[in-house]
Image (cartoon, rainbow, N blue to C red; front, side, top):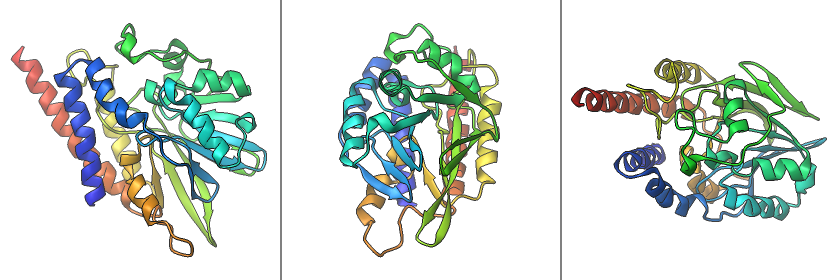
Length: 294
């Protein structure tokens, strides 16, 4: 619970900073952590962490090649590539690239890695125009939030499955943070046990406008539907686009041979989603009050 509270405080700080300063200043603060290196490691089963200290990127090993889940900022692509190599994998073996949501801190390396590998890029259907345009919804001309545009090869909606070799991931539409925000579920082996893993897209308000001229139409209803959906899911391992979502660093430090995997935390998703929902209500009230003062 202490990890969760710290994570939400960090996310709230970033959101508040973004409102109080220019987006460029906000990114300058965030970038220090987002681009800091982190040693790659096997997280659980065939899932490996290859991200930075502040942005989560995953590689999933299958019998027919690799699945890459997200990237990081454009300037971190070389670091991600090096992390993959440190684990003994080859970037050339990436066959599928999955996206959680179309924001620059998770899409920055897509165009470069897709060109290098010829991998198929798969994303939520409502995020396709964002990825192919390289922009943030509702702020299309803001160069500070732009990223290299990339062609989407396949779009998914609720319940669609993506399979490579012996591994299948199921797409769950969890919009709000972005219109096509997609969470990915899969089963992994943890010793003799099967564990349900969810790569949760995100549920924070962050830079989004909820009232007045919202980031996109229907955003408030989308957030609320997402919180309700994930609270009902039965998940053993919560992962996310930023390490603070699930206390990655602390759990990594607890990993020991022969001991239970600390990333197996049934119930963590429900607790996290409940806290996100409460924080959302606060942000909605704050933005509504600010709009009424104008």
